[in-house]
Amino acid sequence: MQDFHLSEKLAHFNRERIPERVVHAKGAGAFGTFTVTNDITQYTKAKLFSEVGKHTPVLARFSTVGGEKGSADAERDPRGFAIKFYTEEGNWDMVGNNTPVFFLRDPLKFPDFIHTQKRCPANNLKDPYMRWDYWSQSPEALHQVTILYGDRGIPKTHRHMNGYGSHTYSLINADNQRVWVKFHFKTIQGIENLTEAEAAKIKAENPDHATEDLWDAIKDGYFPKWRFCIQVMTEEQAAIHPDNPFDLTKVWQHKDYPLIEVGILELNRNPDNYFAQIEQAAFSPSAIVPGIDFSPDKTLQARVMSYADAHRYRLGTNYQQLPVNLPQCPFATYQRDGAMAYGDNGGETPNYEPNSDPTAPKTNADYIEPPLPLGNVAVARYDHREGNDDYSQTGDLYRLLNEDAKLRLVNSIVGSLAQVPEEIQLRQLCHFFRADVDYGMRLAKGLGINVDTSMLSKETQELKV
Image (cartoon, rainbow, N blue to C red; front, top):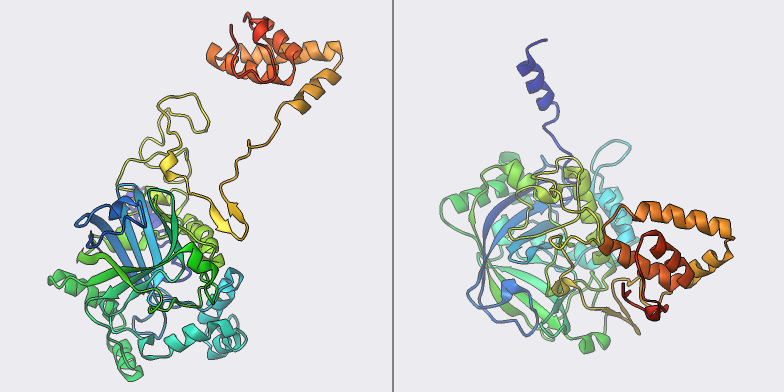
């Protein structure tokens, strides 16, 4: 037992497997390039679309939805279609399916639906009763069920199917004008599907046939390609649309909202290591860049939260530091520590904001999302300072104290505040003065700071010292 190489090897072996994805566990992927072929800057300020001919590196992953990691590629099942764009502004993850709609519009039903696609809790067997029991009581699923049991229910390979964002998203241009948008990836290889009989034969002979096909095609130089297109709907059109334009169970008619080509997605490089680059790849709708944004689609709103949470469980809290998930551009966060924190863990820079360090990251206004219109209101990030009085009640409390309590309070604060630079002392004194002039004066005297009394008022933003 003193052979530590033995114990190290066995201990590592016992820990080689990480939790598989709850959905989309079986998948294949490859790297490639997205090339802009058409100018859409009238709709979006996202820099990856800034000029025709621009190239952006990408990672794509295709998957089945309900099966485990060892399941067959030829199952009748929707296919995941996820693209990670490594842009100069950060990563944009387009996390969709090979269908333009889905089985539900209420995110509360997502775990219920997935349970019906998994195994019966009693006998651990796939059970048609579960899925049809659910579907028969969920008419909103009928559109997707019809697609699933139609010809496109079993794609021939990952190369021979379309991809869709499915949800309604938004694009925002340089003037902060918003349009609603749907994303489409049209296979240039052509749509090809399997019959039930063909799929049964393939599953018996090679359950990994689509994984193998993607690998071999790229290895042999037959690089698969897709045309990336968008549908665009203005906010005015959305207001009079006959259906809810954010309903995940419905499409936008192409005759009303024709496809606009944006560019070509090409996959041309196989991964060097499946675990590192495909199994650990983390795609989330929350990964967006300026110029691409969300919509009031309730299911999308839930996915923005739940996907990132799934990655934290499966890969760890620092999953975005893994090389395959790391943005290929300069970036900064205030996140520190946690299992598998890479690099210098932020070094000596502050791990809080706001702070006084001039080298610490500051909010970039270009990344602030414009308000999202919801009915008669516009929803934006909560500004906790707007319209709030942070001083009156503090002043009232101070004035309630007797003299001895005031002396103890001032001495306590002076003892602590004297340990920091004068710049911070002055900034903090401004707040005390706005609460109560006597409060501020006593603290200033305790700190040895002379204050010009002509400058004192609750509205004063700076102290003249």
